[in-house]
Image (cartoon, rainbow, N blue to C red):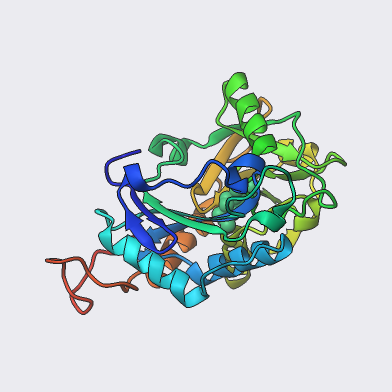
Amino acid sequence: MPDSTCFWINGRLLPEREAVIPVTDHGLLYGDGVFEGIRFYHRTPFRLSAHLQRLADSCKAIRLALPYTRTQLTEAVDEIITIFPEEDGYLRLMVTRGSGPMGLNPAGCKQANVILIATRLEMVHPELRNEGIRLIIASTRRLPADGLDPRIKSLNYLNHILARMEATQAGVEEAVLLNGQGRVAEGSAENIFIVQGGHLATPRPADGALAGITRGLILELAAKLNIPAREVPLTPYDLYTADECFMSGTGAELIPVREVDGRPLRHCPGPVFSTLASAFRKQVAEECKTRACKPREGEPKESEPKESLS
Ligand code: PMP
């Protein structure tokens, strides 16, 4: 881990060597748990309440009692952002089933573990943000919605990892997972959008897409900018023949796609992508211009001017 990484477990900030949980935690034994990935800019978590809502919903869906209130989690986030040495970073918030006897039955797991990690994150090389990434359609499929609802952000990413390995094997940056019916679901850790004839389209959660916070924001921005947008089933053919394609996610932010399965796309970065990417930057700057948490010692106070992100 980079030196700057900070750890908080079950209410306490800890040095890395003490940031441990028992190997009998069902999060490790069975992937039994849920998580969120949250970015902060200017020491302000972006869309924290949406992330905490999704975390609470994921917990509810898997009948996992979250041992902290929303206010307590917000305080924990503020606490870790305050000690993090940089203004911008990435948070990983995890809730595991906790320690218990061997066996799938979680009844013996009496206390969930809540883990928060603050770190630096560079998902893609900055050059690729301009040039665009290449995708393959993975042979590994998204789990069916009636097997595991894609809205649950669970700790089990094995098929996404296998899809990402296929991308690496093929020498490209990212993989797209299809659902069992051959419809496009999403990337291994991002949602996917296409633009065709000025219209924006993205798969529905029912097709296997996580209800991404960034995806939601793009749909919001598209509505504001009068860009027609639809949540519809898409096939690989729709990706191959799109005018533009891009990925969205907290870690990824917005990344243009230049090629799918060896077929170059018409525009990369395309005009709709560029409009949305700049609206996204503006939105982040607007929502994260004030510090949600205390300034670090020696740092300017809230009223003093700060740099803009855009
Ligand atoms: N799909 C998957 C499988 C992901 O892991 C992520 C990253 N959280 C996303 C989509 C994007 O979601 P969000 O915009 O909420 O980060």
